[in-house]
Length: 154
Image 1 (cartoon, rainbow, N blue to C red):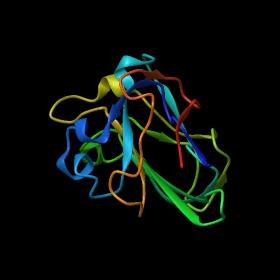
Image 2: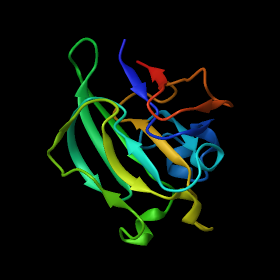
Image 3: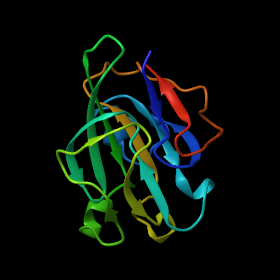
Image 4: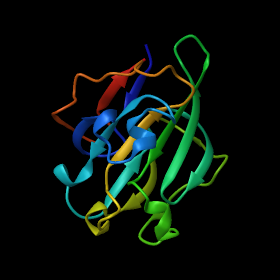
């Protein structure tokens, strides 16, 4: 089993409840999401959910490519908010560079989800890339998770 850590604190939501049809429909991949406004307040440090190489780093999103317990490639996308690409990086501080290697739980980005205003959303999808729809579940859906806590296992 490979543990995927919560990148930030908050209430865990099923992917179907994400306020974006692409994520809710698992078109990017299966996973869960975190509502960070129901966790810590103020500026938050977002952690890498798995160990591996940062193959994509944007202020509002990043992808870590690691390996599962069997050594097969495992990519996890963390998307900080919905439609936050429109902020063009404002309000985010990237702590790493694309191509860096990180351990699970390493700091990647800081942001303040309370500054995200409608129609954007601060909800943070955590997506397993290239996995079958419906293949990710978490016993934490509906409850709170702390940053760095095991969110789900694959």
